[in-house]
Image (cartoon, rainbow, N blue to C red; front, top):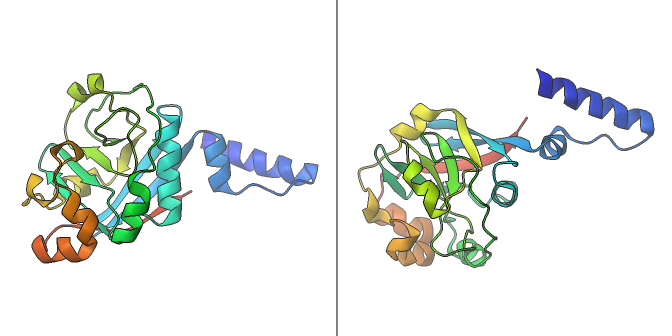
Length: 207
């Protein structure tokens, strides 16, 4: 309710001053929070992004979502009761363009407890596009520099239900060094070799 009231006041104030009214999306960014709905083959997951937790990560996630990077991709690394990872585009050309577009680290301000959302990475200042949802308390990762930028506020049951039958075999983490086939073959490779992976159909910013 407070957020909605602030948005209305800012929109009204802009119209009185003669400025173009800001969109609810841009106002949410101004206020350091926005929400993203992930439409998956198991149902929707809603992530609340808090820019004050990890500003660079929050900004990169917004950029990826609004560019359509995640649309029609796969949850390629799901370990039951541990994490669910996505963020390699289904189109190999698109995945290749983003693979080296790294952002500087954010210092961790929040813990990687159940429901938190953070970027996966291998090297310092190496975050690009891969995201994971913690399905349990993974706070041991805090000391490793994994910085949550958001948390699941709706659909945690959906995240828990994502198909985990392939575990680490369908790509694994960045540090395992087994993701090259995903970058080379994209959805065609994953759908052939791991046909029951759940899909991220569309990601979008919502009010």
